[in-house]
Image (cartoon, rainbow, N blue to C red; front, side, top):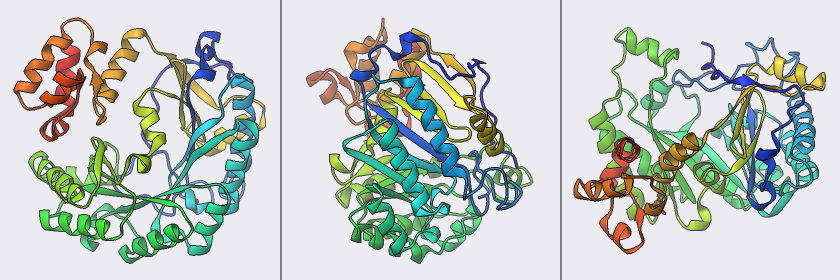
Amino acid sequence: MPPSALPDGDPAPASGELPASALDGLGSSDLGVYVHVPFCSVRCGYCDFNTYTLGELGGPEASIGLDTYADAALLELDLAQQVLGSGAPAASTVFVGGGTPTMLRPRDLGRVVDGIRSRLGLAPGAEVTTEANPDSVTAAGLAELAAGGFTRVSLGMQSAVPHVLRTLERTHDPANVTRAVRSARAVGLQVSVDLIYGTPGESLEDWRRSLDAAVAMEPDHVSAYALVVEAGTKLAARVRRGLVAMPDDDDEADKYELADEVLGAAGFQWYEVSNWARSEAARCRHNVAYWSGANWWGLGPGAHSHVGGVRWWNVKHPAAYAARLAAGVSPAQARETLSGEQRYDERVLLGSRLVEGLPVAELRGPAAASVAGLIADGLVAGGPAVREGRVVLTRRGRLLADTVVHRLLAS
């Protein structure tokens, strides 16, 4: 199954050069770095991310593989340093995602962090996160990551229930999540666990069991996402053949409400529709930067970047990515310059998902007047709107966040 397709766009220059307008004011805003590691030992049936097994790439001797990925990423960092120039701020956040980043050796992940530090700089107190499969980390490896500059690990738990994991084609042992959390905390890493709800065959009690198991581990942060059946995945094919049922919207709503109740009772506070943290300091600052419209450079095959209203994305295949960089050419496949209207739409879409909400004063035209109707419908909290002039979603509003955004943008 091929990963999902990249969007169309305008041609990207081989030099990677950005318009001067995109670099204006770069030094006065935060900069994040996303690192995409496109390797997995197996492909999960629900996943349409840009990932490849080593067999799909031709085995360990492929032109880019586990042993050579860091070298290619460092070449892209050379390009980023050249394109962003001396006016760029030091990176305040780094997020290594995938794929399964911890298929790489800890020292290679550390080499990439060192490359960011030497070429772009790391701000004091920078947040440096890696995603991890619980089966692909060890206590020694986590200690090496912490020594190499990582401050945070995000573990792909998904569920604590074996039959749910089987449906998702997740291969990890649930007991390894607990061991990984303990080992990460022992070396001073902040810990997040990622959960998925709405898997076909998952009961409400199954979901409660997963939530209780996550809370018992005492992580700093929990993400919980509704399962989406993406076209072209193995799970979509199974749904199409009638082997499993499509996720049910009402069932997913019940499970979201249960998550909010269980996590809230355990001391977690929601700060984005699908994310809860024990404190403001435990929030994922890298993702908050995305939702706030900040700048970031995306390293790796298929990675997306955004600087000053210009968005671009790299070629998807690891071999093509490595070949371009080896030839001194930007790996960007295409790019787009966002219009003022597009940036406004994204501000409403993303800003409204945060617990701080969206300032009513930023809404255009009659959109501000529509807030009263959203309050009356129980989708927006009245107190913050009246006292602080901010659009903050209620729990019901979080369930219907897309509806809220549609009404704000349609006004």
